[in-house]
Image 1 (cartoon, helix red, strand yellow):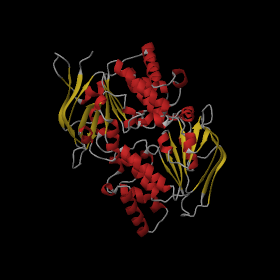
Image 2 (cartoon, chains in turn blue, red):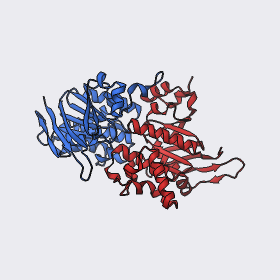
Image 3 (cartoon, one colour):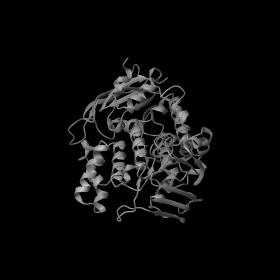
Image 4 (cartoon, chains in turn green, red):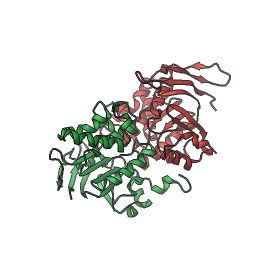
Length: 241
Length: 252
């Protein structure tokens, strides 16, 4: 079992009056699904980049242990809020293959994994299309599939459903839950519905952890309101949807 | 009450080199003071629609025009549409470029000729309308704002221009509780001021109680146009989640 630990992590953007992330501790194991809820500007994206190893904390440490995968990469993938930030190849298929090519996977296995993911994410029909020509929702899905094909030990998702329509939102939530069978998931979101099936829910406020517990504990209206998050029941409505 | 309507008559668009049209025979009539929720699945043509109506791309068929009671019809080429329609992209960071929030918010209004105290007042009004206290934000660097704050800033810059029509593409995606509440207040104010808003979104839940009509787009065509009060929201949500045709929304 692999483990990703954030120990007393802090980060201050140059020129900012206060830290964007302040003394955060998170322990994540493969097979665990953790959702981090926070309002805009609470520090979610900064913390996501730190967890994925894209941003070095000013203080504290990020420790990854037990990853048995390919030595050519860390085993931690990240899905950005804006898929344009991570799609760079000329076709959807090339996009899915790119990470595997970079770790030198044998062509036969690479081809097989890519085909499998194209099928699973319903991207086969647009495999030859340029990601630039896709809608935002399809771009996000392509980005997610290109991470899944790497079989990461940990996946950090930053607002993974922001640009998805209801069909894909429901589908991505199901896929994320499935992925937690083999990977540890850390999902940053403003949408409390993303947290309903999580193993653990954390709340971030002004860069600090302000809540932690099971979905049943943290998704209480008053606790969500304190975090600046819309209560689930309020969105769903009392009689509809 | 302003009787003006922005009309589209069988407009279509095909991307250069594409085999199929991205938009086909799209007609609508948008009344001043009306809020429209435009829904549709990914790749249904909503964003192309918004760019076409705004005037960023030219239709390959059809026309746009303004109609007022007892007045001659005014044809709208893309340049005229650019001037009367405020628009935000689904990725607000694409349209933010200034070095301060104040400059970013006032850029469009300044280009309209506003200056001095009038411009300052407009900027402060626009910032407050999206929930930013001007004194806390005007000197900040837009690039340092969070994704949700950038989205709200992009909205502020557009509403500062006080155009009669607005087209917002996924304005609430990634916004938190506070941001969504301010957005809803903002469009209510735009409506009171007599502007029309077309609000493109995947989020069915937030539309309920906030829009006057719902349009639905499917494979490049507008297939749904209903008053919100007559809509079965639960059914619409189910249809979208299961990828059924939006035409079923109105089926008995």
